[in-house]
Image (cartoon, rainbow, N blue to C red; front, side):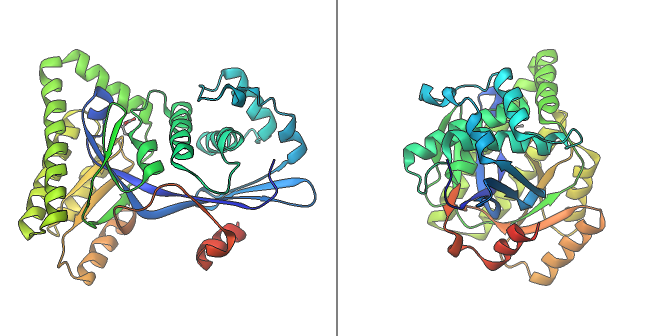
Length: 344
Ligand code: MEV
């Protein structure tokens, strides 16, 4: 099943514009970040295989023999199938997770085990493999939060900057290397509930909510146009447009009911320093992004990060347009990543 160490990384990602609207068939713009999550699967001579996911603090070991007992006939069906409840139960049994394991952690391990048994058997991935990874990651998303649009798994798989609408993906040709702050408010939220909340609001007030979704769609299209222009001929005014789009979308997302006091605070703290922010993803807490315009001095960036950290948030400075999911050789990894994988 596995004879060598398997090292995989996937980019962090954010939705620039179009979250929630994308669930209703509108356009979303999503970008991969230069912040990566690593995973290592390491076989040992004692018949065990170790899984390390240092970014979420998971280290787990399985007996290879037990994994081999698992009925993997579902893999022979060729294409992607939704995991049945029986299969999920079997995976839980084989994974042997303790009862007190946090739900998200155990789902992460189960989703991984499912995907591993299906696709992680190669040392190099072709376009077809990536298509399959994307499909399986979509199934993983379904295990985790119900009825996803598919934008999140697409951008993590393909990387770069993507326009996504109803399963149709196109890459932005020359996306500018925007610098952003990614801030985690650490307020927990449930994507399934937030998506359902927007649907209910749309059903309750169609005349009010449908135009908001149409407007968000137009924001995504305008952002795509400006990013294209920035790739060709960058000019400072383009940042002003991006900032206005961020502000308008943040207000729309609040009107959809997916804001949160912590996100308002994030926007206020950055606004006080002349920077513009919006929530990204499902909202209701979770993460926000702040656009860092060129010419901003590093001490000012540091002061903003410090102000956000003082609110109890985690904050990272990063850039957009990273490569998608990648397989690595053990020797090519940065020593800090190696240490994190070894140090758990
Ligand atoms: C969550 O990251 C993004 C949402 O639009 C849901 C989805 O697209 O599946 C809220």
